[in-house]
Amino acid sequence: MDERLRVTRPTAEHTGETVLGRLAALSDPLRLRLLRVLERQELSVGEVSRVLDVPQSTASRHLKVVVDGGWVTRRSAGPAVFHRFVLDELDPGARALWLAVRDELGTGGEAMEDDGRLADVLADRREDPRSFFGRLAGEWDAIRHELFGGQFTSEALAGLLPSDWVVADLGCGTGNASELLSPCVERVIAVDASEAMLEAAGSRLGEGANVELVAGDLDALPMGDGSVDAAVCVLVLHHLDEPVVALREARRVLRRERGGGNLLVIDVCEHDGEELRERLGPHGGGFGAAALSAMLGEAGFTDVRVRRLRRAHGVSGPALLAVTGRIDSDSD
Image (cartoon, rainbow, N blue to C red):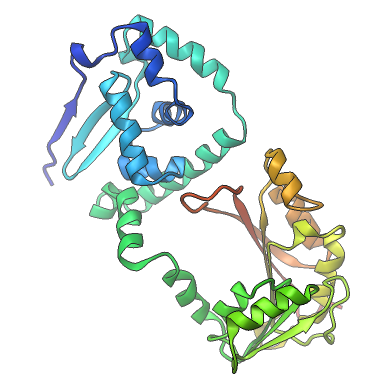
């Protein structure tokens, strides 16, 4: 396909001629993150929105400021418009100013989160580099969410579970995971130590649901050996003083027959937010991927796999890790 490219560069009247004009463009922390990302990779508006984890309208507004200020160039490629910050194309004054500012930005947790989301965006591009969705990868996420919402994928994927399975929701809280699982499996056993949480879960799930609500501690589950095919543990381990003890208990109640013996853990990825540490419990600083993998191994799980989940737009918390493990059919 013959794709015509058009590059838009700022004219002299838009280049932020004065020091005050340049400083104004750099006065917002989000724009500093924006320039840092665009110096690494050319992105569309939708992709900027995903990488910075802000609404697309916010990304567009800040892009306009840096484009009008002469920091960023725009390139049209068919229906898409891409933005790039090229250091060597700046005039000497602007270049020196940015280098000074960039040296002060550091590589803290926020920068690491941006880099992780940037890697996700580029991975999506590589999967479909030439099609409409490849060119408009970021925008398509926004369009899809606007048209269909954000829940349909997780609800539909739960249907891949065998319909005759019994699944334990360990530390069920208000029943979010149980609600997704119950239409797709034979039975869900939802365990929590908090009576208030179990009451909220009961209200959420309603009468007649195939969910059994059970009061109990995760380090001494009120369930028999090999009584469930699979177990999930969502945002629970960081609240526990001894996560490995709870993981051993999860292993004990899993049965190996019928293809079972599977555990899914979702928990907080390691971060450096002090306020979040205080709010999230004993392990409020989160877990590194290697640490979570080692804990499942210590508890007796094999084939342990760790995956970093993408953060949703507009959330204030850290990234999450999804960890899966299984028990061998011939294990003790």
